[in-house]
Length: 369
Image 1 (cartoon, rainbow, N blue to C red):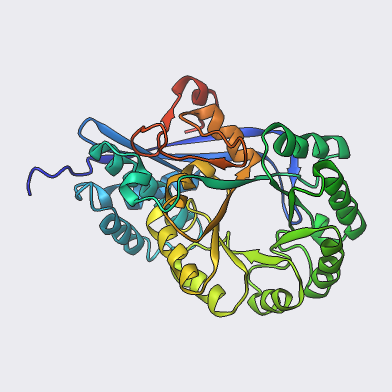
Image 2: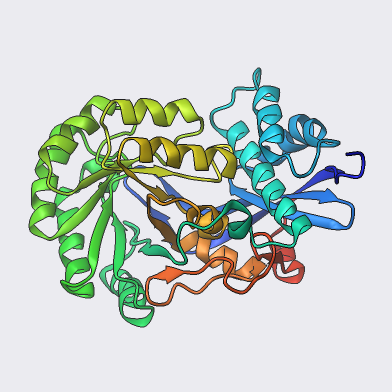
């Protein structure tokens, strides 16, 4: 077995990309997005992974993770993932450490598939050919015209039959504007397109119940984080009383987090972010937890990091085609996917791994370390 390929090393790079307009949701505002890239090497082969996280994530990769996986068999990704999870014990796994693990884990899966000459979905084993997506943006900072153009771009120009906007503006203090924007969104996309909303935990439990009834009247079928995802009892209560799906999970960093959410009966569809929950290795386990309880899983943001893993699980609802991340991934990578008609087809072109390659000249102006 001495001729098996090993991980020769892991490199990092950090890029910060300004948004194309001021952006905010119910509980946070931002004007730039940072991507942390991890590159795993084995001989002449390389695999890439990434997360959207602070630059400190790259420092964690270099200081705690790169040496941990270097020298391990490049085909044994779960072994590397377990080593990394153990290595961050004293640093604290949830949060930045989990995001650092995620970037390296994704890079190792990409590397393994490239070493074997397979699209990652073929290595994992496909459960479906196409992966449904939903257009996501609709930030609270958008005026009526901006929101309308974005929604029509997805629904009319690209044929995506499901879209999402942000509500819960200013920690739930602008309910009237929230409902006005939802009404405008429904007018923009018509009755045939599914309309989702995301409050990012901006409402109280009572507010969310009242708003939920009004959202139902406007045909909203997905109410994401109506209250903080830390409040599992409130989520479960809202799930029991509202007609639309109540969803959460994007801030899950460890497998037990998702089990606690499921055990509480808090969601109708479990969200998980492959760039936060320690990578593809753990994301697939999260999907299995949800399937065991008869629930779907939805990939949160970073669609090209999720695409192949998403095609490998039978209980996938969809992926989030998130405006900020799609813009960056299209700018930085060759091999990006086309969501026309409302779905993407990872691996269809036969390209190995994730099918992505970094376009250095496009990414370089945004590199900060």
